Length: 184
Ligand code: HEC
Image (tube, rainbow, N blue to C red; front, side):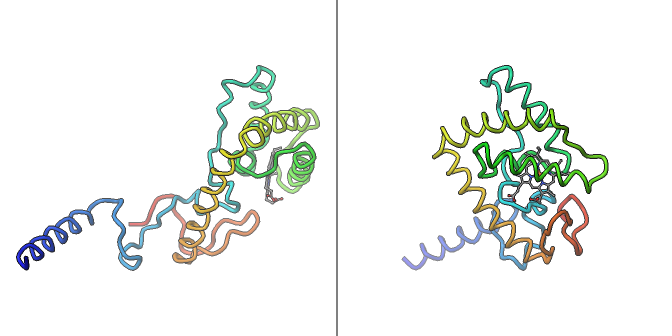
């Protein structure tokens, strides 16, 4: 019996040693200085920044497919499309408010702009898309939201562990993290 447990111990040790070479292996934090997330993930300011940055519009009517193109151009000038796509806002009055707020933001960002015509098309698209993905498919969207919230918690923890600082407003994370690749 003793011999077996020693043998198992060795097998366990060997498996663990082999596992250390795999990226998926959980090493203790001190032994793992490499960031676990990408620079883009570390820059997330909202959990919704961490989700998909595009929508499958293949089943949308032509008008909304055209609207998506305007949305994609207009709303990716300052942050990725992940922000509006995975945000909890879903009804017209919320989108009206946020598009208005984004319009105000363009005034302090040279080179950006949202015209009245673009705002109207984007509003129409976001109301349609939110109904399909967020309201009609409520439980699917809620599950995705939960997943992103959990991921965001992890990213924030890792950000703190690496002392990357908080991401406030438009600021990039200050401190030692400068590259877009994991440090060696
Ligand atoms: C001029 C730059 C700029 C443009 C263009 C822009 N945004 Fe934003 N957006 C920001 C900034 C900065 C924030 C974070 C501060 C804030 O919420 O106002 C933000 C935040 C957001 C948020 C999260 C707000 C919250 O408090 O949860 C949503 C949703 C959003 N934007 C949607 C959009 C949509 C939709 C468009 C296209 C109509 C758009 N953005 C275009 C700069 C911009």
